[in-house]
Amino acid sequence: MRNFTYGHAASIGDAVSAAAGGAALAAGTTELLNWMRLGIAHPERVVDVSRLPELDGIRAEGGRLVIGALATLGAVGAHALVRERAPVLAEACLRAASPQLRNRATLGGNVLQRTRCPYFRAEAPVPERMPWACNKRVAGSGCSALEGGWDRAALFGWTDACVATQPSDPAVALSALGAEAEIQGPRGVRRIAMNAFHLTQEEAARTAPTSNTAAFGVETQLRSDEIILRYHVPADAASRRSAYLKVRERESYEYAMVSAAACLDATDGRIRQLRLALGSVAQKPMRLTEAEARLRDAPLSEATIRAAIVAALGAARPLPGQAWKTKLVENAAVRAVLTAGGIA
Image (cartoon, rainbow, N blue to C red):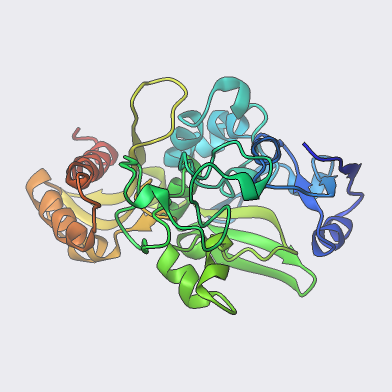
């Protein structure tokens, strides 16, 4: 690990100025320390924002929840307001990581996790000595995961340059909820819908300012000089009747092979509104908007729901030997909707 300076931000403006100057912002530090240990990040300055009261708290405001970026996953998962008005988010937080990590990791930092691809996470303090190709670590070196049999590779939005997936559980729930992230930078405050916050590799390649190689490190719409302040979470009828389903190799501390978050408003056996997002299938949580539209006013039945989801998954592009993952996603999505509807 290389030497770096460490200090605390005295205000939001102080944090923004530090980020604009190239400093790495830290709160729970459960991810940044991993990046530094593995050689993924080499900040010369780390600025701690964990003492800024403006970033903390969970409260109801109008018809929504407002959750500060410093709220830990454990606090969000246990909070009575979240459990009542957005249970899908509480479930997603409580199924992430271990209890120790949930007591440190913040909701602001969790959505900024980077892929768990083993080729990206290889320990290589000096990038030039990477043991295998990874475009995210050394731009232009190639993608070992493309032919490496990585079972968590993307189904949607990947390119020949990268098949990484986004690993955050809460990000999937926030996408299904229709939440927005409130962000501050030198240009002021803005909001980004969480279903557009992350970018697939295809989207990143289209938006990269100069070249395709510049897209390897672009995973969200958050600029390097911006900070997440809080999340605005709708607490409508669909949010209150929601569920999160996570498929993993073991029940304890493990990242998802696939996950699904469903927010459902249904009466008299018919679906009035459905918001459905998938996790670990792309470099972003994938909203199945086609299935959502098709199921509006449809019967709340497994056959109807499965048919709509199967149609939406027709755009999936599994790598060779990974067709099983599409079926796993289908079953997870169907079960999440049925669970939200109270019939699973």
